[in-house]
Length: 102
Image 1 (tube, helix red, strand yellow):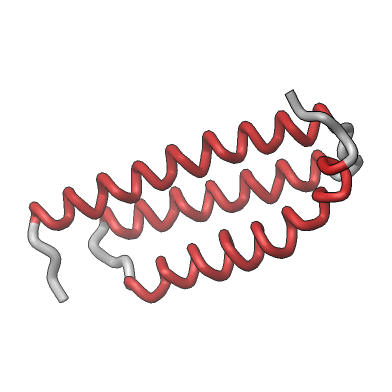
Image 2: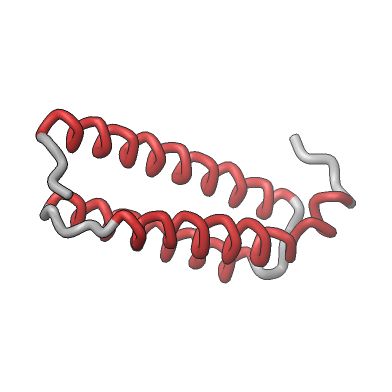
């Protein structure tokens, strides 16, 4: 399915909004993890970096006209929601529930 130039710009705008939001969220989350002295901070920050790198790569693939919609949805669901939010973020919950976060 060919995306028109207008639709392509709309999709690119949404991808950019998502990347901006995720980047800001990760920075906030990393600050919280530092505040609670999360012992696996470095590993968690590296996971954030890898997710953002993959998202940027998917954006490049989109710009080249080669982005498969299923691949992008899979990335969001598998990597961001299930892999990160449900699995990785759950690992630090016990640290944040013990501390007051500013």
